[in-house]
Length: 321
Image (cartoon, rainbow, N blue to C red; front, side, top):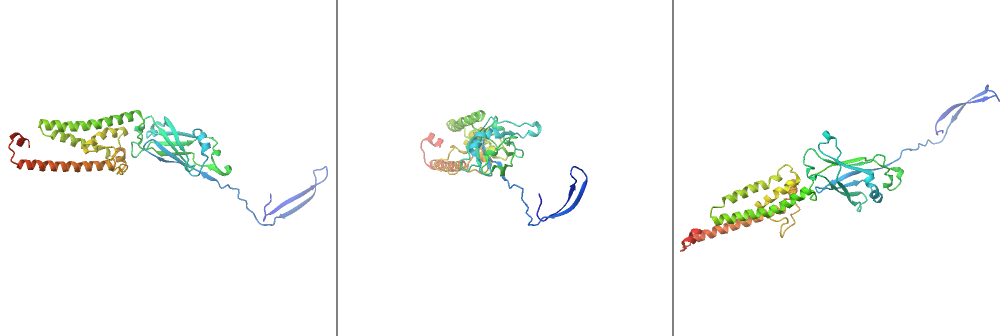
């Protein structure tokens, strides 16, 4: 093909009939006129990307496409299209890609045709996300050679999937369907009431025996120190948070939901408080009951003071006061 604005030089050779000998040679010049037109052969692709959008600490998460995709086709081909696995913090040493027990999609982009919400099941969820500076990670990789073009809308020849792998750090995981974590939760619930019974019985027995309340006060003080260990700046194995929860009784935190005022039950000072399930509402319970106990102590002391000033004739009654 000849382009406008260019000059071409060529030679015309005329040969004799039935012979290879040259009879005439003509030197020619061809100059192309007209406007030079440059055709753009590049394709302006629409690049499609996907990312792992978020995780919660209850084994749920979400992946997000930057443009709407065909979710009907995706639902039929998702597990063929993607390879899903996770890597522990020890990956540098063992080079293991670990499989999940289950990966279930909960929502196929019903809101925007872009977001896929899912739930994961790990063999030992309580061992994930414990380290602060190193992270366990979930990976969602595109399988090699898979024809994914039908997931797009529009001109398929001008759309391409750019992302081939996505990963994100896994948080601490509180999967209460896990057998070990469910067992610890049930033990904690029973121990909670057991702790209330222990402290109440100690009060009653020591008062009846008239040996002083120092042992039960020491018990309560140690429980109060233990109760706040999980909110220090470190992470426990998730089911151990439940092992510490019964000690919150010593702070008069008696209810999971704050009676009469539950607006603060979903507010936490930081992540450690949330892991421990110690909301602002529960701290408000401790403050409230602390105030109630203070008032009771003042009333009791005032009552005893008044009776000791009275002229009580009964010797036993006077000694008791």
